[in-house]
Length: 374
Image (cartoon, rainbow, N blue to C red; front, top):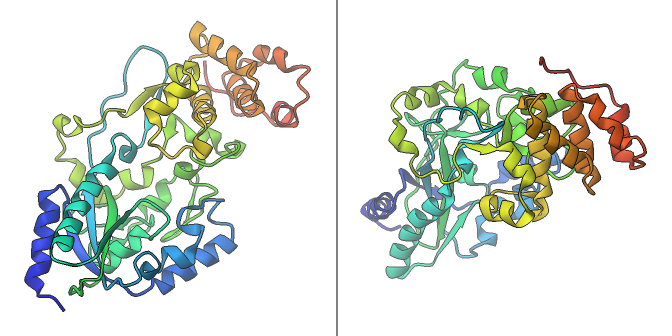
């Protein structure tokens, strides 16, 4: 076992490169986590999500990534930023979740790379793993003592909350490890009570089939029963974190200058998404998880947002709906039909009168969505 002082030196290297918190987890397989993944997948709670569900035997065993692994150095990088005011004028706007407004994973990687570089300089093997199928990052962070599992299944860091991205450095260095911290959620159930779709079906258990953060990333149609709940969300959902008391306490101390590194920003013009080419959309938002790297899914989301927040009397909104109703893609035509009906624009649907596609026909014959007030 290397001296504890060496862990402090690694921690100093990581924090100097931008990490807020660094800890060390043991390298044993995450046996309990694997069982959870497999049982939830068998129950359909993964909602088709792949990520660490694709190969639970791999994402819960660090030795399959680094055979000689002896420890995991786990780092956390904050993405806590203030929410700017909703833009006024210029047409309907769609909201982006906090974690997606800037490339916080690049900043996280820089911190982990600094730790890995120090380990390699000292003769150890080191491999950086973050935001991929190789490891369940939250379990590594829990085992390293960075935080506890909140009832929304996020890791909450004591005194800091859950606005963090997580990653690890796998190494063959025999480092002294941390220990899990105590659960501080107590009787609080705000995240469960505030989920727009009731996706948190039990403390720590999320049904991805209802989770808006997943539904706007998943392939195929957005389920009709959850489209109103999507509201103005183009990408991601922060509701269960926004109501969390530790996060709310930390948010009080944010200043407007804390959000200067958000090139995508918190808001995206809906009509711009619908009018942009695939190339432009992927150039602008390509670091997001977009199914099959196909920009049609961003347009799908934008059409649902348009139905929820668009002005049915605005000529630009009507023109965007007309274009989408004539799109060659039946998924977009069907979502445009939903948006038109939601806005009370049934007269726009005459262009679909002879549409034989079963997806479009199913949308036209479904019960109408609740119509928004004019």
